[in-house]
Image 1 (cartoon, helix red, strand yellow):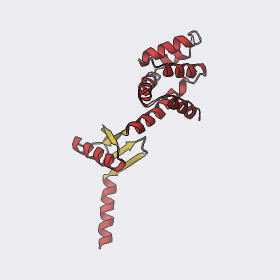
Image 2: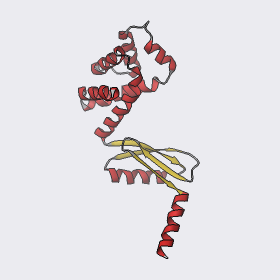
Image 3: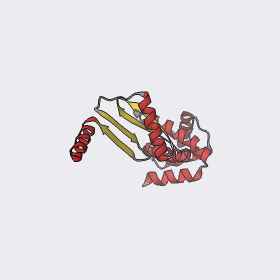
Length: 171
């Protein structure tokens, strides 16, 4: 609920160009926020909010006044923990605006098959889809595109069972 309020307010304050810029800045901070030392620094009562905002602005390499103001509000309200979730919401919005989505494939497939999957999904969703391969030792593949809520699996055993059931139906 809180994440939704902050994300919505930020998105409404930005135009499309600014949204991409701020998304990239928030992405950098979300990545850095995994470090416990960073969290200690940002939550430290010994450092002023203005200094923290300056540090975040420099780390994110973003001088956008709306971003700086947003970071100030997040810090004043002690909501640094929600930056990762805000990053996810901004990612979804930027993906929607650019009509470009990323996902990943688990399993072992060739580059040609990966490209074919991208093309099929792109055609189905009328969008640009970029898939990244995470090689895993599976008897098949699993495909995930989070923002579009797409998840499917092609498992060797299931394909064999489907073929057998089709043959039995034909008999």
